[in-house]
Length: 191
Length: 191
Image (cartoon, rainbow over all chains, first blue to last red):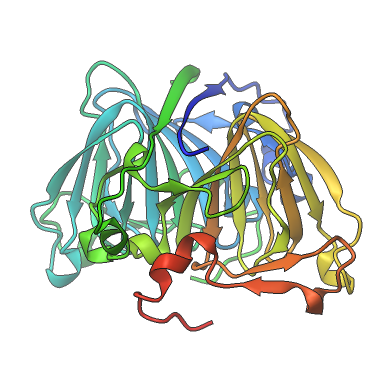
């Protein structure tokens, strides 16, 4: 076991929603304990170039302390410049891109010029609470796929117009795009 | 982006420790933001058939709210029967096996007969706080590899002799095997 090679294959299949799929997706009572990731809903949620899968979520699966997502970014697509009051861990599953991180966000009135870090398949990195960051698929040849872990769900996202937008002007997006459909049917979570 | 196929390859390479590797591994000040998972230490920690990699940890990487591990189980190897006061999410990356779960642990004086769930590559499942469980590679032909997410690190593990061991007789293992070497060099965490 000191050394091993492993090959991992995930299939993300097209979605086939039944008329009641929306309701069942929003009921944590109907969620199977063991779920095939290929069968989970994936959607762009109107964000160009994004495919998001909630692998384990607070609104969809009753998680209280962590969430796990898989997101795929088409070449040139990216997250907004944003921060959130929770920890985040990324594992890059496929492709490559760039992490832009303003790790001194807390000390300034605005994020400021970010540092750029190259990220690629089989790499991992973390983002601290409220550090302003952006993940960008800067590889024009292939999709970039990442597994994302966040703490303290459901996530509250503060989005910035640019790296010099004052922190008070950042726009709160809550619930986030993939929680919107089901959030109202869940017990309210105190923020 | 409605449909896509992705191939993910992780290489877990042999470890080459320098004489000071122990010290550097225990210093969160020397941790690179972006880390290649293939370069991270992997070890059995004396547990037969296990290979553990801390992808993002509290003791090794300064995480405060979540940890991410990759564990590989040789055929026939398994976790102890255990519980922990935190949430856990598994993503099966390779192979197959069985999850044994006593989800009514909280209502009894002992875990009781567990339910068995087949788990296989590309499946995901969660374990609630303090639900007694065991993950077993019951496939005699190949390793089973899982990515594990836990909340509230560092983890406190309560281990059971069998499914009828009274809860008060479960043995606390803290720090857990992979945190032992570095835990003492870190600031104490209140339990």
